Length: 336
Image 1: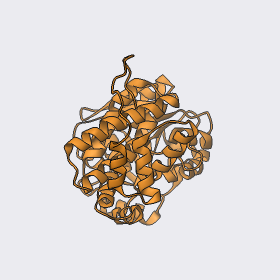
Image 2: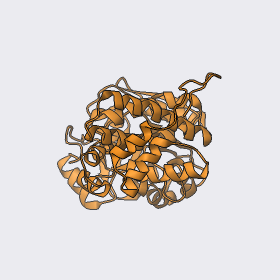
Image 3: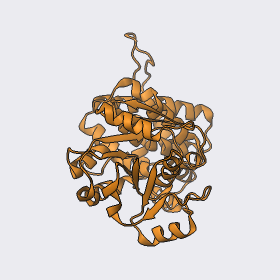
């Protein structure tokens, strides 16, 4: 299959290696002509130096590369997904499957990535969200990994499943694209929170508390938007929470650590030097929750730390001092 990957960051590069290993004809596109030329010459992405790019992967900055693609993967940062989809729309062949691997919620519109892609390209192109616990650094060197391909179109989801699946990259299919994408956005907010906890010197007990209660908040928002309950305890939900909140590969966790050590949110984001998706998602999650009158205390606390300068330790005290709750209610449901 001819596959074009739009976005030459670490994730787009790792997926180009995976798909090339799977025997597909892969083109990796960069919006920056200088970066494309350098990678083509050196066969290395500086963001992912663990492995050279084989000559079988074409590298370009020319969007005409999508005109012969059977499948197009959109892998830019979430804030650039709309512009990328708009730029590529006129070059797509009808019926081309689009795969969204960016995790976020658009500022202002509160659209999920698949929704804004559909707005820009129209209904002739099925959009599949590929998400789950998957650090680029590990996928690039073929460490066993599992993800979810989600789409309301079963045939499209299963096509993506077949294209990406290998002995080192297992893919499950799902119709719940809403839940999968909400998980992908919210887990970055939680990773910031867990990083802040780590930066303040709190321990494993605290992280377990944050992970477990945050998954309930994720489930609450996701279900309110139409997601399916089981998604939140699966790979896209709890799986991605675990990997993002516990690993130093995670930019969101590393930024949180800096905040917990006393830096402002802006200073932390600048020091990381790459996109910290959770910083932007925190505002969108807060605004969506407010519009739906949902109580998401952990996500709310993260928002106040990031955007209003609240002291993280005082935020923890407020969370720990909330009115007592039942974990499992008398009717058998978990309570927020």
